[in-house]
Image (tube, rainbow, N blue to C red; front, top):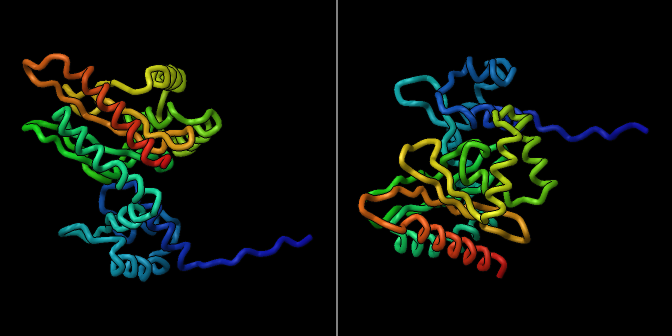
Length: 250
């Protein structure tokens, strides 16, 4: 039996290749560098780069000929109904949590091998570490990512781990498994930040139909002279995550 040939859209394929190539890179790349990266000639992708720039998906880095990805794709993703609904349910609860504990908080979701921050609330106090919307980190190297992994069905977790291996994200499987068991047993994560000294990341899952779809995280900075703040913040974080989960369940 002859296999039916799929329809092809060469121009679309080129555009997607460029976007996928630039997505994990923070530095500006020239036409020649992009051409080499995607394995296509400069003449093939020259017009595509122009169109992507005109449509706002790419921009020229100031003072260079290099291209960088804009946040246009991210903003389109934020308009996707499940994401938009999650943010709408979470924001009032996040504001209330921040006011209670005088700490900032943010909401993160998975995106292949990464977590992506999709919403944040700044601390109403005078000090707080704020994570910007759009911030990304590898799942095994973020407290939010560990929480998302810990509260997945076993088959889903294995698929995520396979993605990490395919994307060549470094992690120690035995150590990771131990961390996930501890987080699942406690119901939350309390881990010193890998990024900021003196900050402890507190994170709890937002659960829908038995699996974590997001993580609500507080970058907790201890203030001098304060007592009992950490345990109280964990309790309020868990209540906030549970409230958002119930809102989503309807």
